[in-house]
Length: 136
Image 1 (cartoon, rainbow, N blue to C red):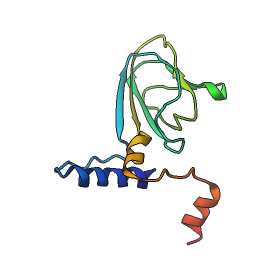
Image 2: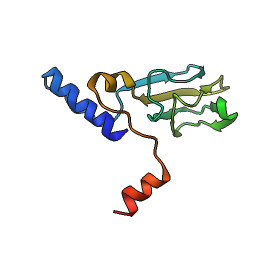
Image 3: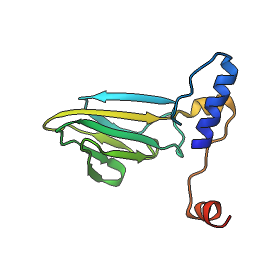
Image 4: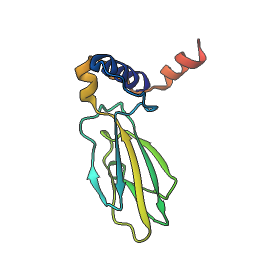
């Protein structure tokens, strides 16, 4: 993911031929969600191999992150960070009972990579990690 999104950023800067500041992120998109219920959804437009980075902020809220496909529920308190394959896992944050909720969601869309001809990264595997980091 790091390589694919980094390559996309470099190609866009080259093709646009205008000076753009380098953004210190591998993500192409960012949303800020403030005091909104997040209905059950999967993120369309992203590759299954892209991870979304969700940062829960705010004050004193008791929100729960639901991973509906797994029938799981997790505390999503201020300061929590979550990486998930948003296209592969249905997720939601239903109504919470107190406090102010803010989430910063970073994610990438596959259409940028398709247009630039950059291949999608593969899902990580244990064998891939062994061969890349321990056997070299």
